[in-house]
Length: 81
Image 1 (tube, rainbow, N blue to C red):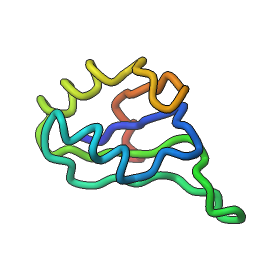
Image 2: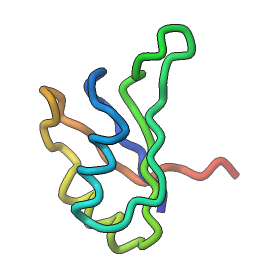
Image 3: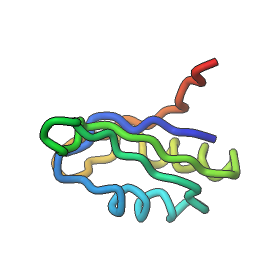
Image 4: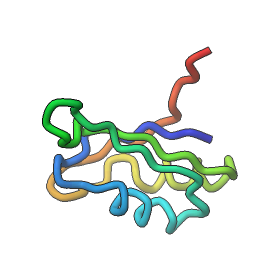
């Protein structure tokens, strides 16, 4: 299950995100979206977790949590199809 994480601090790293979500299960991939010009975070990213139950638990517990001064928003990513 792919999750969209929004309202991330510009200093949050992929490693930070991965560690946060691994508390709820296996993280298959983590992609922090970066600005092509500056190389800095755009404030959102994606986490993919193979087990739907783990992803739902992470979404429930991490949505609205304060991370580095920002309340992050976690929801299921919409598929591109």
